[in-house]
Image 1 (cartoon, rainbow, N blue to C red):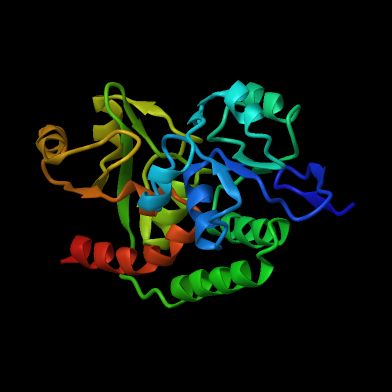
Image 2 (image 1 turned 90 degrees about the vertical axis):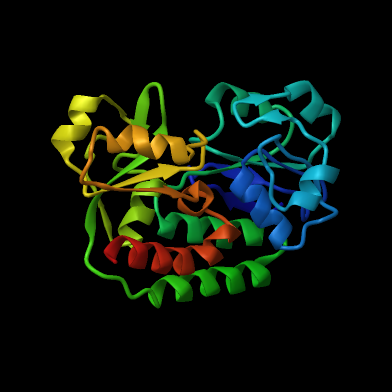
Length: 260
């Protein structure tokens, strides 16, 4: 029986190529459909919105942190693909009683490329995954960006929360030639005084998980009148699957916008 290792270095064994897959992470769901697993994917979360046609037609099994374990069990999957950060540990441990669970752990582009290649092997789509990985890598290698600007990347409001160090978003900021002004790990909560003290030249307001809008630009302008404040596509900065194909072009555009 083939043995595979996930990104937590856990061993999982599969008797054969999986035919009934459940994905509980939006970016990995999009990846699996991109690899051509249209018939094999039998369950996704309510946040797995891409591709839109598959979102409409595939059974929903709860949210990323509120999984319907009983419903998942009833679907009789032979593989579940999860993520250390996006899913709750206790729920993932519950899924392990149902079938093998492959868990990703991603904080940078290298980790995402590794995930793509390993998942490809896991689901019998090694060749397709290798092409995707190479295409993403080539796109990032071609980036030509102007020198970095100090940046705060907002993910939440009331309270304000930002992306800190050791996150995939922080790595994407670096790829976009932007320097994160917040050095705390993960997703620290900040207040107005901390923001003023950090003095970012750029403030990026993400479209997810909090849906920042134009009206919030004025709110932040009142705090940092000299900063460049822009709404950005949160999926580009935080989805670590096939959506990465679109990231280099977006980063080129954003870099030019911020340096005009």
